[in-house]
Amino acid sequence: MKPLSKNEVSISQARQKKCYYYKNIVKRHLNDIKENIKSSKNDMEKDFYKGRYAVQLSVYAKALNVREKYLERFI
Image 1: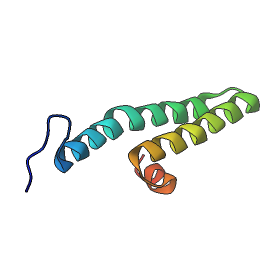
Image 2: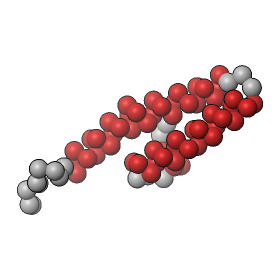
Image 3: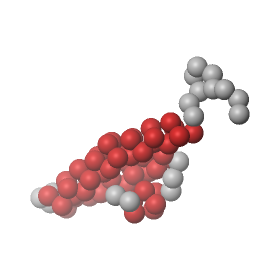
Image 4: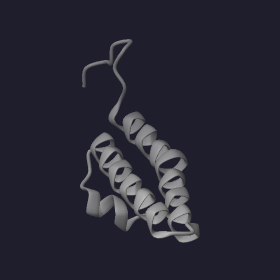
């Protein structure tokens, strides 16, 4: 196994970083948006948050290199 250079990270470090990102950022943010959908007062506000949720889910799925349906399943 070749040694890692200064700028490279091991696979386990990358996985830990990905799990931290999911657990502390993605999950919290998407759950906040879901709460906003539940507490919205009218249809316009609800539609806004649903659109925002869909966009954020897509962005996070791409960043984590997973499919949207799998990411949504674990939230």
